[in-house]
Length: 302
Image 1 (cartoon, rainbow, N blue to C red):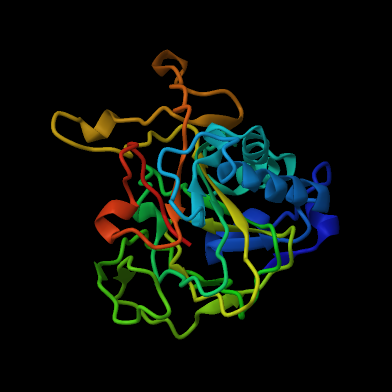
Image 2 (image 1 turned 90 degrees about the vertical axis):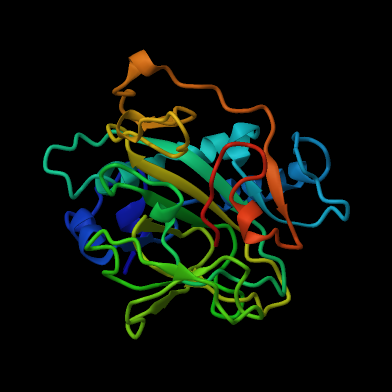
């Protein structure tokens, strides 16, 4: 589903059924939400992760990277994208739309900048809540198309409605390394109703954390750049990292950015982010390492 630019521009009223469509289908596309100048600023800023402008903990020897993890930790441009007015308006409408008493407060905990150069495999079916578990099923990915996303260059595919039951599907290794990276695939569902989400640059795809989605190899001669920010209901605790001695029921990762409304937990204080980010090199890391590179974070792939 897609909204026109006239419906979606900041300062204009969003469609009355936007939240209903998101709750029912698990995703919505808002066209022309990010301007060409804003997109170009993000694209130009991306060079800072390879030319030494921004600190990177694991720069690859050949300088080729697939994605930057948490660019908003170090980049003012990426920080601005996290609180982009249009995106903020949409997530404050949809993230907790399934919760009767939600007041629209949201927070962001993650960003990822994808380059997806020619030949890069996509990722098999997966759900982002597997990697970023919320307490109330409010995780929302805001997938900003910095360039046109097409079938040829590996656009997103979604399975509408697959989020509804809040089930995290089992996963297994796949047997299609030419199409997908090493990450395992979710299984146990009918994918007959899957849809490609081809969008023009400037569109933003918003999708629920339980929604099954995937992408295929980039078969074009150019990149398919995208910036993905993840948001959730600010009232929901974020038990992202678990281990010995951690009480999951009250665990709350606090390296967050309040996006709409005040932080409901000021007594917990917000932890400052690390002063360095990390990248995923062109040669994919093994699955056991791809979600943790020494900095205590996790990530869903695209």
